[in-house]
Image 1 (cartoon, rainbow, N blue to C red):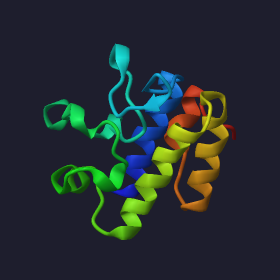
Image 2 (cartoon, rainbow, N blue to C red):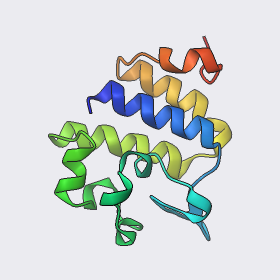
Image 3 (tube, one colour):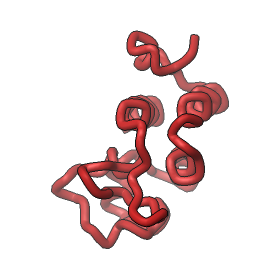
Image 4 (cartoon, rainbow, N blue to C red):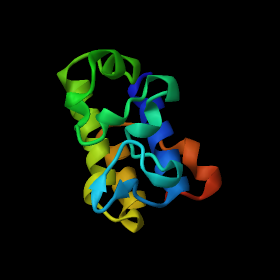
Length: 120
């Protein structure tokens, strides 16, 4: 996936789910009740392993990192920043943070406009 595709998938997922994927205050790639974090939604079910929970994106296996579009350190930083939106902020802040993230990274947010998830 390229950065625009990653952003589109993560933003759509987070703004649709509207709830953190965590347990007892610890963020999880895959949490209770089928919840997924910003990066967890990018990992196919057949590639996910429970031990991924507790690692940041840099600690994921190379096979996973490559699958979700990270080819270099800049891509990893991009993914880490998306992960932090989920992990460090309340769901009611995600919309504006994702909007700002898109602008800073020269990304479109048009995939979300029909749903009203992103401000004009």
